[in-house]
Image 1: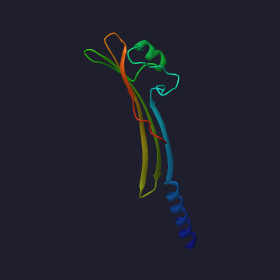
Image 2 (image 1 turned 30 degrees about the horizontal axis):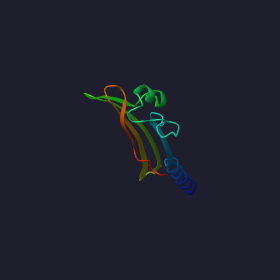
Image 3 (image 1 turned 135 degrees about the vertical axis):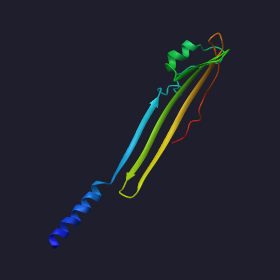
Image 4 (image 1 turned 90 degrees about the vertical axis):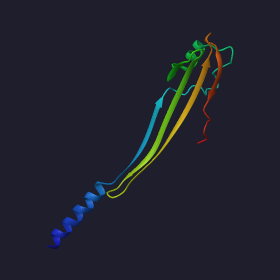
Length: 121
C-alpha cells in the first residue's frame, strides 16, 4: 500500500514537471533595415526612385497617389518569453517597428522622407 502511494506521488510529480515549461521567442519580419546606414545618400529634390531602390532594395509597399508615389519600408522585430504551468500561463512579448517613408513627385524625384523614432535599447 505504501509502495503504491509512493508510485502515485512520484507519477503525479513527474506529470506536473513534464507539463510545465518556458520558451523564448525571437522573430524578425519585413525588409532589411538599411535606411539607417551611414553610407545611404538621400537628398530631397535630387535623389531619384531608382537611387532609393538601388540603395534600400524593394519597399514593403508602394502607394500610388494622384501626383506622388510613396515608398514605405517596414522592419518588425518581436522578442518574448513564455511560461507554461498547469494552472497558470504567462507570455510577455515586445514588438518593435522601424519604418521609413519616401515621397516622390511625378518626375520620380524625392520630395521628402522620414524615419520612425529610433528607440534606445
